[in-house]
Image: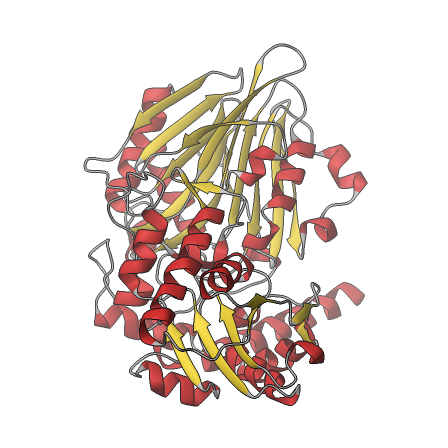
Amino acid sequence: MCGLVGMVGSSEVAADIYDALTMLQHRGQDAAGIMTFKDGKFLQRKGEGLVRDVFRTHHMTQLLGNFGIGHVRYPTQGSSGTALAQPFYVNSPYGIALAHNGNLTNADKLKAELFQSDLRHLNTDSDSEVLLNVFAHELQRLGKLVPESEDIFAAVEAVHRRCEGGYAAVAMIANHGVLAFRDPYGIRPLVIGERESSTGGTDYMVASESVALDVQGFELLGDVAPGEGIYITQEGKLIRRQCALAPRLVPCIFEHVYFARPDSMMDGVSVYKTRMRQGERLARKILKERPDHDIDVVIPIPDTSRVAGQSVAHELGVKFREGFMKNRYIGRTFIMPGQTQRQKSVRQKLNPIELEFRGKNVLLIDDSIVRGTTSMLIIEMAREMGAKKVYFASAAPAVRFPNVYGIDMPSVDELVANGRTDEEVGEIIGADRMIYQDLPDLIRSTQGGGSDIANFDCSVFDGKYVTGDVDEAYLDNLESERNDQAQHKIDVIDDDASMATNMQSNL
């Protein structure tokens, strides 16, 4: 899961892209990058860290041009490090840069094709570089000195035929403009907006979430449709084209559970209202099963559970209280490599307020439970603060299967709910009672408000992969690549490589 921005304006765009990336920082804290185009040259700055750390004033003054793309990275496929920071770039044809959010499920097959048939070399193990080279090869095959929009869309059509999985991408073609496209299922999000420029023209921006547009004063035109290609010339002409044979909207429901900001609109649905409805339906389930419940207070796990927690408390008729103060300088724990690091970080991230727990029966609300590390330690802290009983509720169903479309939780053995009942999960995390949202209720919560979305990608909950190309062999291979043991090995290699680089630089 990463954050994307692409913009064509009537004046310099780097500052707007920077501001948009800061609004998408929650989608990736590993690395950030911006690339613009001016006077026949690509201008780039990228590196590891948060947006504010990667870019300084002197970097921004060098990122000239009226069109560009930006990216914040959260590693899913491929290791981390500066070499994996995006955008990626290829020289031929024309000069193309690309940033990508998602995972290609047939990346290994495509890598072989790129080497053996397309005669292209890859510098990293990132599937984003694979996507870039597939697009570049298909555009090069057309053999045009000056590509027209029809040629660019033809290349996107070929990408859709060759690439499988979930992906949204923004690309920049030297001397031509910005391209954006979304996979035929619309698994990963992408929106487009416009605003009137100070010179009287029209600026366009595409981004992973509408909140990136809002802060820049853009009017939301809507979502990029599944399989759709959007091309904005450097002169500011917007051209849209459906590039997939049989597009079907099946967006990732986990965006509404956890990843997206609550003030975003996704596929016409308010994330905030979705989470409100999640809480309402969860409360109804609690009342149905335990109409005589003894809950004294509802406490959310900050921050993504607050909206659902407020709805639960209201429906139950009990107090809603902030029981934990969050240290915002600690990253998301479930994506951290290694159980020891995750456990340490949870204690550093959340500090309990004793008076909200002492002598009370507490219902803790979280958006979801992945490994159970956070949940276990939070319950432990609640008991240390004197809670009589600790009930635990998840606004999402049990996560029992790996996500393969761009969320880094692929190792089945590390999912606490895999192969276990709700009661067994409750015992493991130390809860007096464990309550999960039912999947039909989650779907109805996300469909509410008159949405036209018939189906969602719910693979982390039901194991049904909408692209139809994920089998046991694929999952077994993914497991071996992305479990904690494998990640530790990658971290050691990366540290060794970094040490070698530093030694060389000091010679």
